[in-house]
Length: 365
Image 1 (cartoon, rainbow, N blue to C red):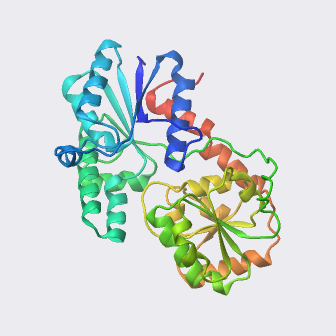
Image 2 (tube, rainbow, N blue to C red):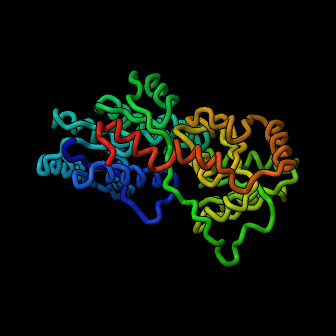
């Protein structure tokens, strides 16, 4: 393969959220595969202002991609003789279209973190405001361009591939499931925040709509009827503290520096997620730390037969209550090596590198 340009939002240390972690992992995989043939183009996200800002967004210029940034990228492709471009998100579809029109020989790979139109439709159903309508239209427009203009469409799951076919008339070409860089160091808990004082169920997730709705539902419908306390870890959840803690059996921890101590001390991980797209990072994290999961079909989407080996599948309050009571009665291992092996074989950096190499036609180093 000739040189490849990886186009992604600007990296920050540490990555914030599952999407940013996956973007960084793909960059690392590509670096191992391509070495000095890999190039990076980071995009600085900003909120556009001015009379033409709304028109640009609705036309597909999103998340740091502007006409001037796009022109600079196109010039770079020519100047550096770049033969392939990997777009880290279907929200960059306008760039895919411009590359296709300008450079017939440049191959475009687009990775779909979600089917963005489906994701933002869910957000619109929750907020029901004009801004959410605009965000949905803008992302649908950009994603449609990505589907039409990319040679390879890389989705997290078969479900997302089928949804692309239904929405845009073209299915994905490749599957590249969720993967995480290994964080299982078993380091000591930070001073003053040792979570190991009692068994608890752990919910991990930032304040995006499906996480908020899911844990509020669990706190209201399930937590009052079980003995095991639930702890909630995630950025931006503090505004929902009153709802989440109302039952008295749920504690909101909020943002933490490291997730590992909280996973390590948890008896089980819960994933009451009822909406969304893509794959849920929290399932791969639980496997990485050797923990079983009580979750919905939406939470396990894309993970194949993992649910039968790693946990309990629940959709109703009654099913969650029954499963949680089973958890309370069981002596679960604090670290299940069979679950850890699932992570290593299917959802680790090494597993992603093998799959990505096959997609690009690159031999493993």
